Image 1 (cartoon, rainbow, N blue to C red):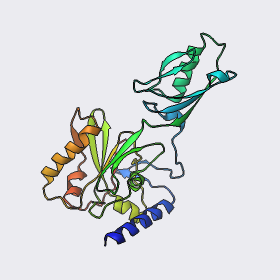
Image 2: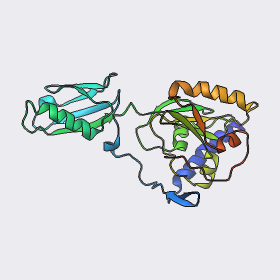
Image 3: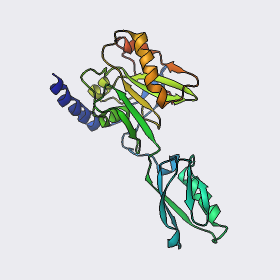
Image 4: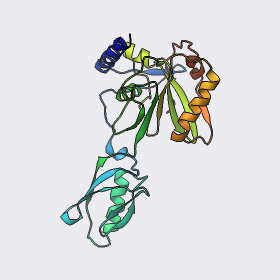
Length: 255
């Protein structure tokens, strides 16, 4: 039976990837938006750089200043002439302007070009009932079920109808439930489950004997990964799906 599940999982995944079109999701009877499945990557300029990211710097007509650097743990890089430059927390465009400003003390109208070589600061965590749980680099636009695929797919004990998405929003860990099983079976991709840096996907077991004990364990698991200044805020559907109750409504994760 386990071997059969492992064969069916990638087939379902391929079927979902083959589906085309858009899904309009409604919340309270109002159309909230669509996901264009043809767009598969973030524009580079929208990335917020962080420690560990690697960037290539090129200054026009100054080959001696061309180099590839990694943002250090303190969030800085070193650029000849410009010196130490704080890069963490900036977009590529902002960092380009900052370096150009530093170089302008020594060069006339410096033209700086920056390309991102590696975005190691953007990470997501896939935990629970997946074959290879761990932390993964979020270097492209990714849906929840695509992240689970990267972690090897579900185990035989996974609750595919109650996958938990944990997202840090203003100091609170907001938890919502995703019915990945139905998404793959029907090909419907619900709104706003594109993952953000720091998101946690937790796949609970299909059977939970004691919900209170499970929640205590869940809290202990996610605490090292996310800020809990305001505690954990559960969406209304979470307890129902963990108890095994069916929920036919489309699930929407707040932006």
